[in-house]
Amino acid sequence: MIVPSLSQQDVSLLREDTPATGRLIHFNNAGTGLIPAPVLNAVKYHLDLEAQLGGYEAAAAAKPELDAFYTSLSALLGCKPHEIAYVENATRAWDMAFYGIDFRKGDRIVTGRAEYVSNYVAFLQVKNRKGIEIDIIEDDKNGQIDLVELKAAITPKTRLIALTHIPTFSGLINPAEDVGEIARASNVLYLLDACQSAGQIPVNVNEIGCDMLSGTGRKYLRGPRGTGFLFVSDNVLDQLDPPFVDLQAANWIDENRFELVPHAQRFETWERYVAGQVGLGVAATYAIGFGMERIGNRVCSLGAQLRSELSRLNGVELHDKGARKGGIVTFALAGETPVQTKARLAEERINVSVSNASSARIDLPHRGLDAVVRASLHAYNTEEEIEHFVKVLGKYRE
Ligand SMILES: Cc1ncc(COP(=O)(O)O)c(C=O)c1O
Image (cartoon, rainbow, N blue to C red; front, side):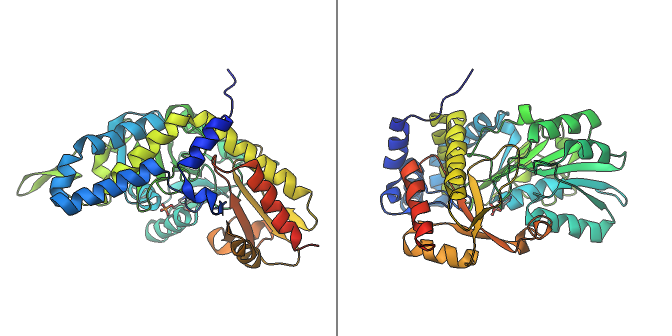
């Protein structure tokens, strides 16, 4: 079945819900997406409730909305509500899973060149602490993780496959499902960083076959800042020991004993940004309402349009790789640094960001790059915005 992209009517609705689209061109969705009106209203409503009733009382009143967070996120990811934990950001969500693994000296982690900076720094910390080894799998000829090499790299010492689905610094969509097949066949834990993919393309944990998955609220899901989530499959729950526990994660049984709660909420903390939890639940429901297949198709086709138009511009070097590419478009302009390009675009009320080698040490320098401009498109962006963007870039070359 071919799922079409969003209709023009859907795009108009998305833009109506996103008033800032009338004032600026926001191509920085890999940084933060613009929050749609239903999310903004839900967060404001809850903050107001806290001011009117008191924080604890407001949380009690919002119990249905707080419960809806788990059902919405589980519907988005294709898992059970109790396999979802609410965490303050994607990094901490990922950490709760990663540091929950009891690594021993000589254990190996397999990862790819797209891996996110904070994840890799955590690998290095555990390497220094415990003497684990890190195997970096090379890209294949298309620029995605090489599946043949990945399969060959798995040894009886391999404890974890850690993959970043869509990197922060390129248009690549890694073949997460194929990696899942290898993980299942070799019975190795599989932790997927879906921080850039959740909300950008369909992400289904069963189809992917990952055991743990982390994501953030503020990017393609268009939720509030300071929110994130972790999926932990029931199948591996008991293989992970949460690195921190509190009264949310565990019950204090008697003076000397506690018991972890029997689901993914053992990775949460009690104190939280409650309005953010409500808002993130609404953001997931909002995305599901438009259809993740449709959103994904539109984001990918806008990304392809931008790449195609940029490739016709003199002096532009495109830096995206991968057999499958999404809505993140990276490039550099001859005679101008990425920081200068970003500043010039900002003067025209166009938001982009810059990805630096310091956040991509096993990828960008490996490709001879110090920095790239990152233009990241969402479904509410338009073909006309892309044309305007390319025109503004072209002006400099005249
Ligand atoms: C691939 C990837 N993983 C993880 C993160 C971290 O997300 P957060 O800032 O919510 O911790 C980012 C943020 O840019 C990212 O792009």
